[in-house]
Length: 182
Length: 182
Image (cartoon, rainbow over all chains, first blue to last red; front, side, top):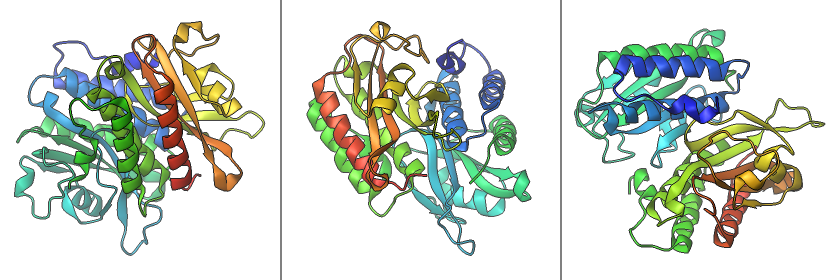
């Protein structure tokens, strides 16, 4: 199988089936490959193509990717820095605690925003984004410290639900353990 | 301006104008930001959206992104490893000298393939790709050693010409000098 086939999703599958394929393919791609840039780049592609294969509202996802802990930020004021993604150009750095991404990084808790306009201090990298889910990725080797986040934006309100939370948290656990983090 | 606007290209612009916008926006995004993952992620997004705004054959581009020198590969047998990109899942590693990407990395010369099937040893990450351009990125701090490549694939034969070569080599020069390479 050529690699591109991993991001081909069948018509008519459920969201659960699409996420299951993302996890299965990610696990295969991560086999004997622990480079975090390589693995996050392919994972962003898997997520993007999964959403595009699904019905409304999932197919309205307009950004899917990762931010990681900026190695140049001081431990006393850590910040996220843009990692591999699919979608339009995005904000380069986000301080822990700032916006939806920063909240997930600072708390270690998934942030599921039905309407980003309802979140105080939301950072609008793209004004088209109306809902968002952000899932922290912990490095268990480093005692569970947040080393990255999964960030997915959608151009409609209510783009994500508890199914997305469940499966993205599974993906975060897989990614967290499958990469050597800087 | 929100960041996403950087990847919005006007209708009806020429290929030269689209590439000029890519360079202008990249230069702005790289200002005071030398993290290579962050910068390559945004550059891949700029390229992808530029191609999608252009007429045939540029709008048939099906992969745009980067490979970088794999820090774990020995200097005696260097290999490329997948970096940030937009498009379908891709091959993780490519030995210097292997395929179109490996040829660009090994020779330090742009490879413009009108028809990838005519290239002996072409690596088909995606069978849909029919033409390809690969431009080496040199780190002038390290004496011009190839640290990365720009790789763009197109689903039709003859997707790229000398205009693409000229502008992608300008982008490679900008990226090479704008990032701290590992």
